[in-house]
Length: 302
Image (cartoon, rainbow, N blue to C red; front, side, top):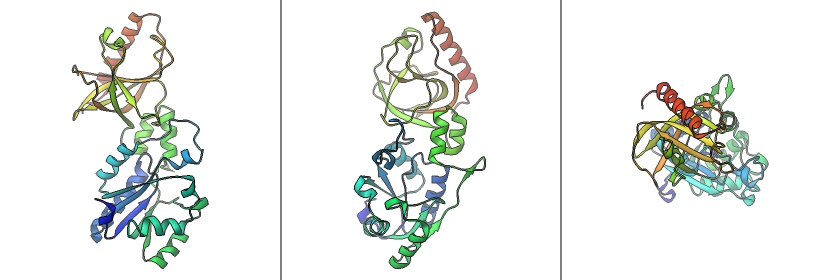
């Protein structure tokens, strides 16, 4: 639905990186309120990530969800309109009132704004819920507060998800997300070493800013062409073969077709072991056989 067809909206604002359980709760309220009132369910989000523009990133690989991944997730949660705004240093200096007038009232015809427990917006994060309610009283929209979602007694946040992924704790990441951490990419041509060992792998070209788990071997699933397979996923420099280039590759268990150029989604379940250097190819092959057998036994069919 194009934004110029919006007659009135229930909306929320934020980066929503990861679309974790806290985000899901907010988006479900947006969707349900919109259906209840016969309005449009809308989200205003930003690209690039504000922390990137403001120089707050410590690493290039940072984002939990690409715009495409985010779009699929929020659409599945019942959002009608996703308004993606380019975040710039100029926007960072915009006061809350001007932002509300320009984007939420003019573009989305806001009727209700749904915000999380720690939400702030505008220049220097001046736009707290008290200011938003004041602006709403002036402009004819209300503000709905959403309580934090807790996991292990701590509010879910994108920062917590990133920390879990960077630690290789895929179980905690899944608890925070409400689903397994995943990445998507195009299968590109590799050097055929996996095939020569009897385990042809799909080499995945991943978005340059997508956060990767630590190097190692993971049990997970690979979805391609509407089918899902158990997968042995390797991230790393492959020190037993040649170093220097970090790769993401997956051996799809029980799959024997060529998928060069196909889009594959990998979902991580558990880290099996760190990346290791083997003395020869036979030793490497034995390790791969053991990994595949363990992963095939460990995972449930999808």
